[in-house]
Image (tube, rainbow over all chains, first blue to last red):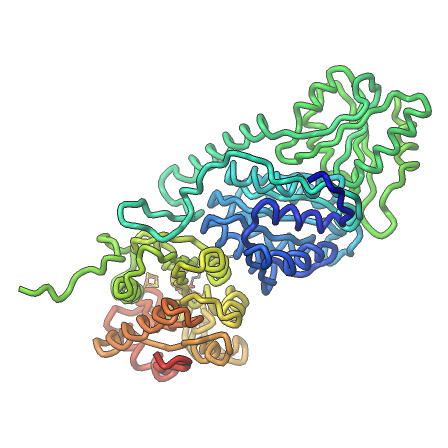
Length: 353
Length: 247
Ligand SMILES: Cc1ncc(C[n+]2csc(CCOP(=O)(O)OP(=O)(O)O)c2C)c(N)n1
Ligand code: SF4
């Protein structure tokens, strides 16, 4: 089982989905994520699943909605423009408490933008993205191994909490090749999907999957219940990685591809004798606020690195202790704007106390 | 004494919210009768659309998924592909199916999804207050075509049953009306045939049911029924446009 495979990030997502028991994949081509539908169009039917190239991303997410309502594991994947089109469906899924996995391999925008890496859809992902005020689970892999592992986790968390889950990566992580271990699906105890539509048998309750809530107080009660669920999620499912934070005088923080580059910069800083650590959130929603708060009790200086003009920084600032100072270095996404380790090292030098 | 008329088992014993003279209720009943006839209620999944028929689950005693506006054929695709042994049908208005949801219906039909689509054409957006629909007739006044639908500006009404019958993926397509006893009987037969296609695994079936919206037409039920006969049927002919297996 510990045999190493050398695969692309996007392929790892597709392999993990099959291992996680996905029955239905619905998608529409868009770079830089097309390896996912390509892989699944080839492999999913062999594994007894269904692959449909939908007429659009709108069609695809609504097929996910239908399949998920029928009680099976279903997923879609896309990037920028396609993720925007899916937002209506994601909002309906959130309102209907439906699980489902959405993979977003971010590309630069706004508009058609381009296919280079970006982290500028952090807000869209973590703030719900569609209308109505809701959150979805957001996981941010920083390696091909994590593309694999977090895709399986996304299915489990989504089923467990009945909240759509997104795997949020970018073209760097999606397109690069690394060796991974194709871990078996984790054994997780999941509740039976008793709410799923299956054809109402005599004596069984009628199952209705819907988001329309017109009763007096019905919608308010839904929002309060979801808020409670988000709190449980934050309590139990926060995930993050710390590197050399114990004695750190400065903590660099970043997710996904920029966290990888930051890791090299942190090593350079250590070599230069600076006590610098790294805090990498793995769950973006729930955001690991707890880790920031506890580290900032001692270390008062943070440096947030993003491939955008600053989005995650909102969450970092909301999470650290009041007297901690958060500096920012980011570049808007686009061809040639991915920061180098040297560039981040330079920023570390500037803000190091 | 023989009981000759009763509520179909697939319908709940409740009052509907439909306006007086609205024919959504009659069409609901015919769909429920077809379900009873084939004994498929316990394996049927209904896909509700956004419009006056959104409360499908309040009237049909079956499991229901509510789709976003226009997306019912995609939601039905997902449900049917996930559970091929189930009977899956959508119930959609003309704004839902022929405007915002054109892409979803055309592609589900073209893929030959093994589902049944009940399309209710009342030439207007009922739920939102009588705006122009893709099926609004030439010259018809609505709240967003106050001077009457102008084909030069708005295009001509869609004839969905004819249009879809041209796709290879469509096994059955028919237009019906429920404005007279004779037409109700014919509609009942056609709706049953549409479900028979699915029950026998013979592909995508489509029913366009002409319907009234007295409220938004500014008419009483009798006038509305008359308009349907005098204006709609000549423009939207009742016919079977495709019956690939001659069921
Ligand atoms: C994305 C979106 N746009 C608009 C609406 C508002 N809306 C609700 S029902 C409806 C039209 C319904 O008309 P139709 O499909 O003809 O059904 P009817 O009510 O006549 O039965 C519209 C536009 C919506 N719910 N969602
Ligand atoms: S508004 Fe029109 S379509 Fe809606 S219930 Fe009333 S009559 Fe029927």
